[in-house]
Image (tube, rainbow, N blue to C red):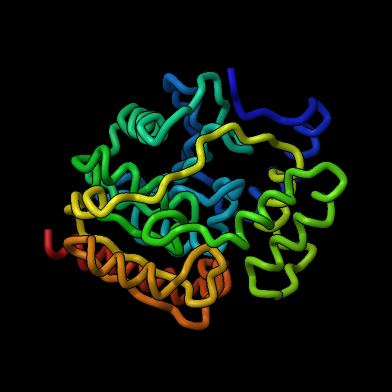
Length: 294
């Protein structure tokens, strides 16, 4: 059975120490849940007070809940926020069953949200989490009130060849040690990542210590995107290395029925951290607009 796993017990201990340091910079969660699904146990944290119209956050690859450090306090000040660590990824979720397809990816998220009785949610996904959020909107649309995508990958435009080549280097023994930091700098368009950055540390350590066994996300078809009926916000980073940004914006506008697709020309794929105040304000403004219209 192909499951995501840590490379060794020692690797797990080393990762956990970095995760704990990163998690310590977040606001204290009000609740913590370990939710059983057919594919494993999903770790879900709630921030802020309980209430209607909650936000649900899906992070990027290896990002975990820690990835939302620049955004959580602002989000939780306005509404309940549930953040998931992804099954099949490093973090506090535990995979016990194979995830073979996009159907499986949607199934475990839908099961976790169902167990917590979360409906009418404002679903927010960043990077790979944006693909997961779109996938859930395609396959479980009744659960959503809105969809927010922050520079989502493989959603409106394909991965470029350069990204695939650099990603492959990370998995090569003897090369990954320098390839991982170089990859993170490349994502930020050459900007140096501070040594004490908790998000970068968790992502880097996850990439170092954990072997992912998940299917490569497939680009959504026109028909799949057209099927999404909830209001959507797509923030596309103009300097993103994950896709052709202008093509992504154009396709979002062409295929989604109710979308605000925005090109942020100066932003890199690290948009949610490097422009946190602006992103937080835009996302919360969109959710207020959706709630008012409803």
